[in-house]
Length: 105
Length: 196
Image (tube, rainbow over the protein chains, first blue to last red):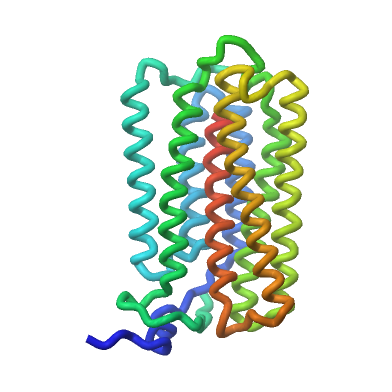
């Protein structure tokens, strides 16, 4: 099996360029919404803030870090780390379950 | 969406991908686990301090919200720098990289100012559990930002030396991935520490 040369690699890796300004504005708006939620919906803030944080993180990873347009192997490597991180959080949460709970301000 | 042709002088690999880029993603993956450990420690210890200062007394959400916006801006300028060199615009690359460094330095200055306010209120690493977990988490993040700034500086120097062009700019992409990850971590920290 012959190894791919640089021309073949370059052809396979043609990055698409999304509208970065739109992504940036979305991140800015979502940040403003998060701050608003923390002030005006303090009792339900966890239910709004956690999904919002994931959406913002997704925008950064998929568009700014080009994971949406790049080779799947990079995404697989990153997802492995995310899965390990999630496992860590779950295990810690179970271990310290009696101590958990975000106290009201 | 526009399609830009990226040409990099990557070595031949059996997977057909740049090994440097794969290495950066593996590093980012490991850093994800590292920061998740710090974040979950903060979450578990949240509210366990016996004495103050406590989060709702000490933390300045408006200041940190502005700081967060500054870091998001720096992510935009970083990705704009990469887009510029992918189009062969070396002058714009340098301008966007300088803007990224300025914004990154502004973020660190904001963090330093916030730390000075917290220390003025009596908070420290050894004061209580909140101080220990807060300064450890944000301190490590700030260190990563500082490392990123130094790295961008080296890439910028390559730009001024004419070593970056449309065909050879992998170093810009690599530092960009690191910088966006640093922004990504702050997005999570801002939500968990300051808002929740």
